[in-house]
Length: 333
Image (cartoon, rainbow, N blue to C red; front, top):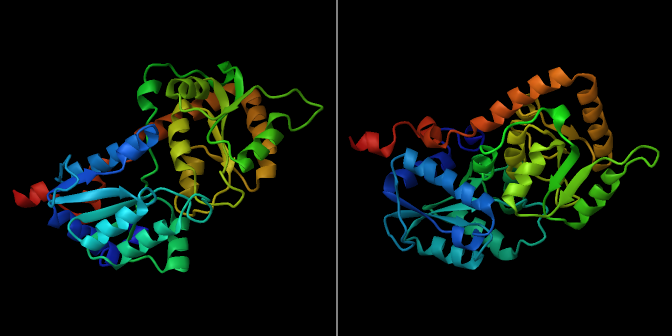
């Protein structure tokens, strides 16, 4: 991903490299605001691994002049913009939203991204090549953008480790879905709960919940884990969902998304089954469930390979070294 947005010699590669070698510490500034949402805690932990892997030290002081500050793109956006313009710190804006579609994003967010684009001390971390193209086309924001898989996270991993991995044929639940129940999702889920009145209704658990243990137990006892876009427009991938449910071994089924990088890898290695349109999701689910009945042993072998791939996670400790060469601590030695 990083090579796509930031090949060596590009503005964003030079900008991030400059920050890494100009500051000795980093500070993650968005956790208090996102505290109740564990996925952002996991994102912050991954960013910490990345920075520490490159030799920077963690600072608890948001005013530390020697620190790069990680800040959310859409919380306290005006404050972020002022922080960028003051230029006292290095700033890395963490962009986690679907820019094309999210109806809660204010104009302040766009102004924050544009302020970062104009600054010599700011970089935007973006998780989606579709978002990246959207920023370029709509706001002429590109030279400060670095693509990294920041939404791939493992907030449920500690709970998975407490439970064994059931074979797919042992699982009593057909379909699991967790997520904010937007109007689009409610509409799609209604069609999936009983797609054909002449056939038995699938056993399903579909709800909005932040109970991590319940989510893990449900995913582990479900054959299919469904992911649905929050909005009718097709946008970036729901990587935060895929990366946490994939470890359970259920077959991930979701609507097609607009990103292009790595899609074949998600299909071949992650076992993700894509539906071209939301209306096709019931047929895709039916096909997956039918395959499980026909070839239980083959499906179980495939599941275990798939789980190992999801469990491998991104190697955050070395991702910057791979892109920028020796870490600060090795240079200083």
